[in-house]
Amino acid sequence: MMKQVRGKGKGKQGSLFDIASTSAGTGAATGPDFTLEEAAMKQYGGLVAGVDEVGRGPLAGPVVTAAVVLDPDAIPQGLNDSKKLSEAKREALFEAICSSAQVSVTSASPRQIDSLNIRGATLWAMARALSGLAIPPAYALFDGRDVAPASPCPGMHVIKGDSRSLSIAAASIVAKVTRDHLMMRMGRAFPGYGFETHMGYGTRAHLEALDRLGITIHHRRSFRPIYERLGPDNA
Image 1 (cartoon, rainbow, N blue to C red):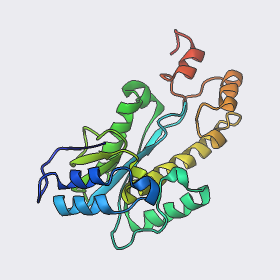
Image 2: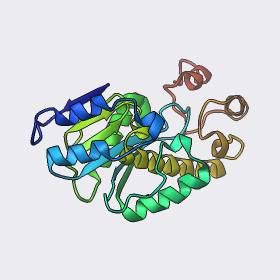
Image 3: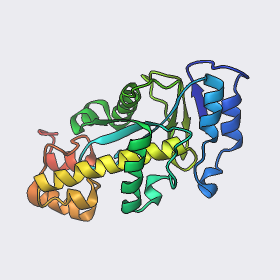
Image 4: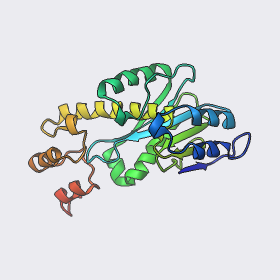
């Protein structure tokens, strides 16, 4: 479930991987903790960033990635996978994270998604988010199944990482709140599409709005419901 890449680290070889493997799956039941971060800090001797994304599936809007380095002595209480939190709780934690941690956010536009494909655009944005941190981390924990090839530091992917790592959970909250705010502004700029409600996902209301109002510059032309509506000459 985990993969370490780039760099040998310090101390006992493979110790971080061993910790991650032996604790695999426990986070879903107990909530995220700082175990992986502590192991990485011990092995790599520096800061550890959590990285996550929001917006891979929608038909419109950017994919947003966040990299967060938590202060071990000032971790906000209540961090969890953003999908498990109410909007009010996410907003409160967003403010707490941004005031107590290193945070960097990057987005990939619909045109970048169409050019690179959604996976490529997401990995590009993850690497850019890491590069944007004020103090470079020694190691990164990536939510999901991929490590960004252009990452400026060694890293490990962690499946369901936002339920296992506090740093990834924090990144998921920052990315989610940032993207939601962007989509709300998009909804005001393009009334009738309901972006502020469905956040760009392919809901029935969104598809009906597409048929009624047409495609905007914020739609992903490489996604089937969009290119089917554009036709072969305009996709």
